[in-house]
Image (cartoon, rainbow over all chains, first blue to last red; front, side, top):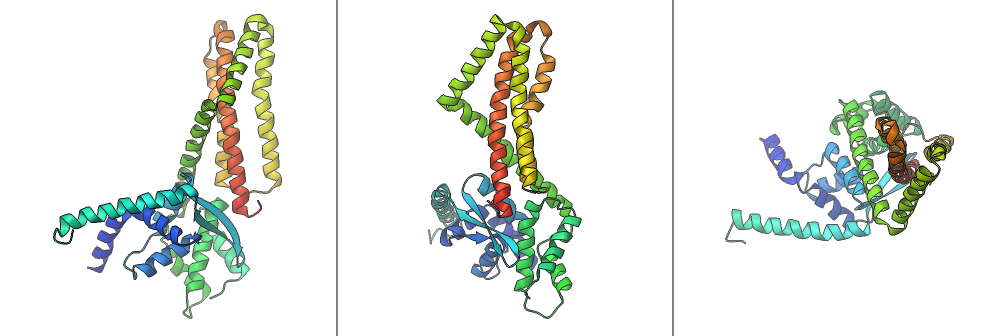
Length: 116
Length: 212
């Protein structure tokens, strides 16, 4: 039963992955991959788990689109790749969040018309 | 659990042996796994925790697939960049005028001094090749190793040569003087865009290596 809930949630969250990443980076100066997965887990109390197979390709795509910039720093004997928002990334975050809010509003109207 | 330099090397070697051949792909994976192991607060030994982290990340199998996937997505990024650079070169008035003047010059040579067109063609084809060789030596001296970014940087730099060669073979000899200036101008556009892509890849590889 638990697996089913996680799987159906994953499908619903899939389209929002970029928005989640952008929102987190908007709130933090810079973040690295593992930190993003942990932060999402923490914020959603373990309800949402971003898989590594989805996170890194999404980060690379956002980087290629010029929405993210990369910084590399040496941390405890290894190199760490940090991501941060570019100027256009910050603008895109605002528009993506507006888009998401609109989507939630529409869904609310469909699922629970009294609350909409 | 704090990891030593040897532990980190072990993680990197493991990923390499399992098929993740590019260091710039492994870099993020190593940091992810090491961070997860270091976050572990139990009493299990390093290898057990490492295997647990591999399973958690779903990296305990199909590592060759991850390598291929990164290879494909990097190609997509550089292919897009190459097209973007070509369009930007043709949109910039300065470079566009430069290419038109280059075409006109070659065309004049073809009409007024057809015997010299071959020499001009060799120079046009040869100069970017020399630059490519120079850049390859430069990157080799920086010891950048097996990098997916560098691989595509070099590929798109030489893309002009790959594309021009069959075109030159296809032109019938009697029409060579008419078509050669156009093909060479196209070659120059592709090589200039390729050079810009290569520079971008080189800069990125240096950045990821932490030596920029």
